[in-house]
Length: 261
Image (cartoon, rainbow, N blue to C red):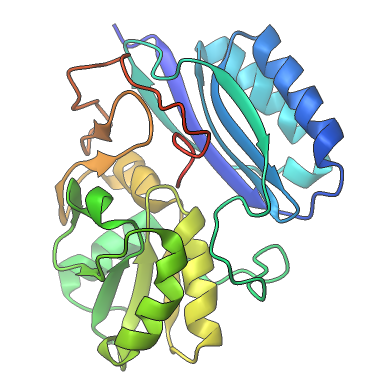
């Protein structure tokens, strides 16, 4: 029986009270019996949480009561067991590290494409203006090895800080196409899309909500394999079921694991 609700969410928004917010969120999460990881940084919030449905939605409702997070969107999946071993709330310089301070997603977002539209474009072989689609996987190479969109571009980066130099080395590969950047839950592909636009790549979009929202809305069309996740489930199939036989065994001790989107 799938009794544990797992959510992933992030928002780029200015946060200037991180120490106080950290204690408040940690106390609320612990009181509700939740486990997972929350990252707070001046640029925003990033979280993966798991618990009973009532506890999860009580926490999300409380978080959305803060005007900064009122429109926070979640990606949802279910598991038979708790995939995390503890509850962490961490303060970071960036909620996803790129080491490119000029990128400020809270100030300007790259335009996005939703899952149903991307599925339609892939089926017709071009976007609505007739341009070829270039799907760009912004995840680390070992994540890509678990599964990705068919025909996606993979620059075999080892960590997200390698994306900017990889873009500069391979930018010609994107010329004349509609580039759709994607990642697990949306956060890396959002920063990547902004960087590409600033670097002069035309027609760049991010996949709204990443692979997890794509699975949630349209299933696995045009996707081959699973989606690696940073918790004890290890990878999710397009129906959002856990592929790992170790349903509750391995939540990493690294505070950044369980939080990459």
